[in-house]
Length: 323
View 1 (cartoon, helix red, strand yellow):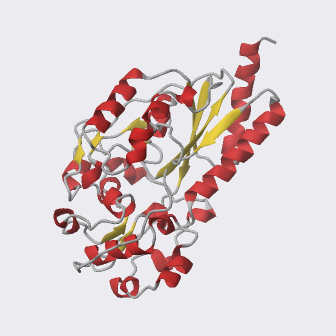
View 2 (view 1 turned 90 degrees about the vertical axis):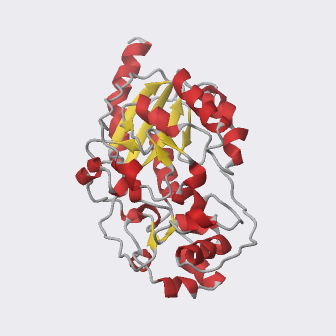
View 3 (view 1 turned 30 degrees about the vertical axis):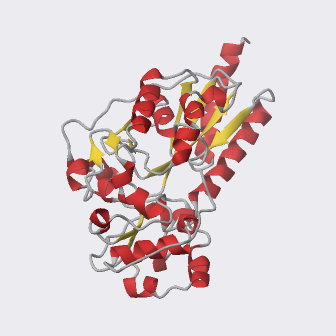
């Protein structure tokens, strides 16, 4: 059996490992430099659309070439994990993004990816790889497009005809030359629902200005008052924002997540502003310890709550986590 035949035979076995781990979406891309996306990244950074996320610049070279992340890479395996849960945001209550209402997806995804890599190495001992999910300097969305997971929509999220955009991305850089899946067509068409719905005008077609984005302002914007213009437009979001996903027609095809870890804690669905404003630091830690919300820190979270409630706020906490 030639190497090509052997790797072709590995494809369905690897896909089965990913499906057994619970990933609904699966695809493989050849590890080749993608010049258009590199040019896009450089222009996006030069325009300052990354806001205060300095690590985006610091690790731009690694993001631009996955070989800098894993020198032996020949294929990039991408997976998607559905996290959609039902629920309507009540206009008088605080809003937490759907993805953060359950347990921290980083830990869930990494554990599953490690299991898959270990399973692959049992089948093919020569396999070596490096996993990633959100925190590594890898252009996950672009690799997801190349691997046929979906297309990058006008709201810059990856969209699937089967699952909309309510899914997490993760992947593996592997030293095996595996058969590639084909990219899919962009089905956004003439739709502008996400762009018109964004309350802070953070979106242009296929381009996000992070400095105006509610998700950025409530998660990545550390230790500064949220600018008054944006604070007035938070629309009750205290952590993240789902508006551009909620209005997307493709999300009418969303399916409820089956992963237990992503099921929301009821206490974090439509919480009352009065309850959040009364949180002590220890109560915040107890409530959000296993949630992505914990990463933003007590003082920044309370800043968000006060800003969304229309109150004065100030924060002095220093960030301790960086991507």
